[in-house]
Length: 93
Image (cartoon, rainbow, N blue to C red; front, side, top):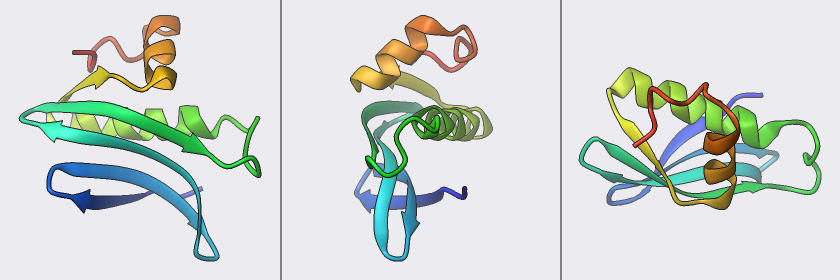
């Protein structure tokens, strides 16, 4: 599964997964300085139960590390993931 980085608007970014032109998963954020404000996670019913949301978050966290960014959890999925796992402590805002 390959995620594509997209700039959706000024300072609005996403990692998306599309298949045959259909968007099946995405995680989006607003870039505010060195902070990625994680505001939305979506996974299609076609992919539910396969850990895709976690893969998206892991991909975004790796990107944050590469860029020297922190992540602020606004999206309910990201909030819950940050609370459940210490794996993101280095990028948490």
